[in-house]
Length: 418
Ligand code: SAH
Ligand code: TYD
Ligand code: ZN
Image 1 (spheres, rainbow, N blue to C red):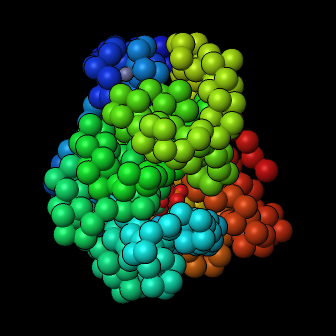
Image 2: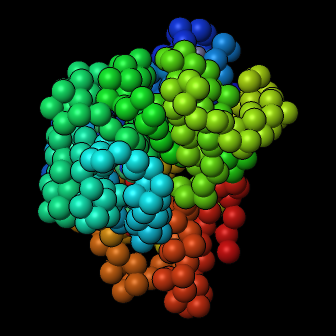
């Protein structure tokens, strides 16, 4: 398997910013990558789609973003395999989000909550159970069906201006529009904001939570970079984007889920007083130089070092004939495997609880994905923790692996075995 040279400079050094039209300067080229959630059937022979995964930072508005866009229909469709409810931590997280909206954000007589990217209904089913009017919008009809079975109303569609106008015309305006791990997937922010403007009540709020670039840099979690994650938000870039489209950033909350996220709340100008947390995070970002190139360039160097270390470790274990398996067939792992050249020769099987991924091969490097039972029935001495963002939950339920002498391999923030 060929691996790009550590000295490789991004083949394409710059592009136009999808938010402000300014100059996006590339800082890391992760090579050609497959679709991160396209788990392949073993008998499939068609050539896999691939695209150049290059990430850069806008010199003008500070938004970190991909330089190449993958057509949305390739990623989000009936067979999209990601299930939000696959983690008990995330399920509890979204139940709490719903309860908070129900308790604090529904002022009017006939409140209405819209979720963009409602997936299997993990958040909205609590809203539905409370008898509150709601609508999920999600183009992946497989996950949408699961949501509907849980009592959630879903529109099988991409959210964009036309969708939002149609919903506003038929169902009225929303008190809250919410998107978790979805807004960062959508390059066409102009259409999203036009849609939010059409659908949100004058006093309504648009709330979204996504991986935070500050945490990605600190934790060196380069595997957050893949086809679906188009933007990597900061308070600085979100404030600029919101202003550009007639909204104001009024709150930011740091979240521990998915390796560090921020929940942003936007409102129309003058409708809500900005929480002091906004200024505090903006100051912290200015202080660490997030608007300049240095933190991104340092990150790129650290990522190449991680690749070196991980390859050294895994090839060393292979030479000793020691078995290594993977834990969690995450979308993130596509970046790790394809950037570091990890195939079935280095990691024999990846175990995962998602039925839609089992019996298939990981994108690009074709490691078999198997049901979690095998992890316990046929324990290997080493397990590469691809689902590191769910570490607390996983280590609690897999304590027997460690007790039997098994060792976890981690690759963020550095390669470590314990
Ligand atoms: N909110 C869930 C799901 C995140 S996965 C969670 O946080 O776990 C992202 C979801 O967004 C997928 O279900 C995908 O189908 C959906 N999605 C992608 N683009 C979208 C768009 N333009 N409009 C609405 N949903 C979209
Ligand atoms: P996740 O890290 O949430 O997201 P992404 O795919 O966007 O990187 O994916 C977690 C994957 O790990 C998902 O396929 C389910 C699987 N998983 C397990 O197999 N066991 C577990 O205990 C948990 C929490 C997740
Ligand atoms: Zn910009």
